[in-house]
Image (tube, rainbow, N blue to C red; front, side, top):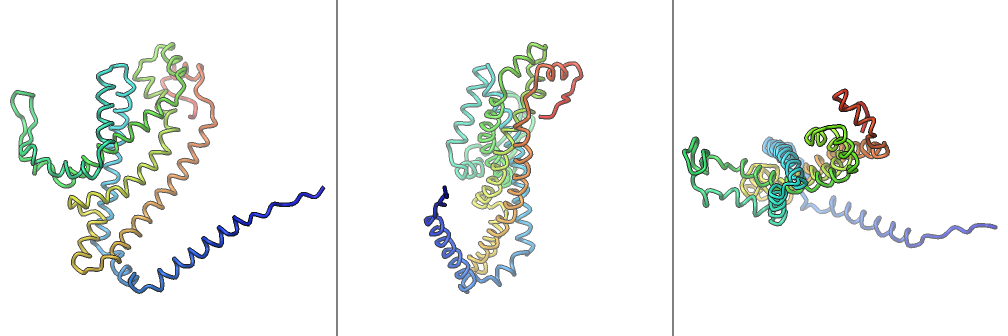
Amino acid sequence: MQVKRNRHYGRWVGVAFLAVLAAMLIHTLFSNSRFQWGTVADYFGTASIVEGLLRTLWLTAAAMAIGVVLGTVLAIMRLSPNPVLATSAGVFVWFFRGTPLLVQLIFWYNLSALYPKLSLGIPFGPEFVSGSANEFITVYVAALLGLGLNEGAYMSEIVRAGINSVPPGQREAAEALGMGSRRILFRIVLPQAMRVIIPPTGNQLIGMLKTTSLVSVIAVPDLLYSAQLIYSSNFQTIPLLIVASIWYLIVTTILSIGQYFVERRFSKSENKPTLTFTDLKRIVTNGQREVSV
């Protein structure tokens, strides 16, 4: 019996439609002189743009470092049997996930309106260090507080999901071998939880790179703000926005490639078995893990 192949007419129609749209887009990009590609090329590698790009990369790395550390602490607190710790972490996550990041950035930038003077010392006692809030809360500090604390709230949910993905039997077996809770967390649970934590963390990193553009509102000279300073003086708004967009695309593409290889590495490890009782016993006796997770 001869098998008749199905004709996917809808698929070919869709391909033709997308091809027409792509041709129209390419045509308008190169035929519309208002894009001013020559101006884009002139400003693409200027010193102010490159310096803004470096500040963007620095903000991304610093804010993600704060977010990962804070998120891990919050996740451990939320999973704690202590109701005070769990509730405190839950309220933190609720607040910083429930309010817009832009509002948080503006709030930290204007903190001196609430507290003109900041001090460090014993509560209701002597002050060791004090000074004007404007001296402590610079635009960079405000940016890191806004980005880092907000990211910490989201990372806590990612880390918590990773910890919960580890079978409870792993903890029970480790406890049966006499391991302490801290050692169980850092030697047994977190290494296996990384399979779940790493991939979404890559997405958060890429998102953070683009989110740093919000700090231009509080005059942090990042990539976008550097472009804004230039087009506010020469009125070449569209070309300078294209310059910033191209740089964002380049960096996000590099990060996406790195994320692809990291995810492929951890997807392979998903097929590996979890730690056995013998593996856990080996950790206790030898003080190190000898199995790959």
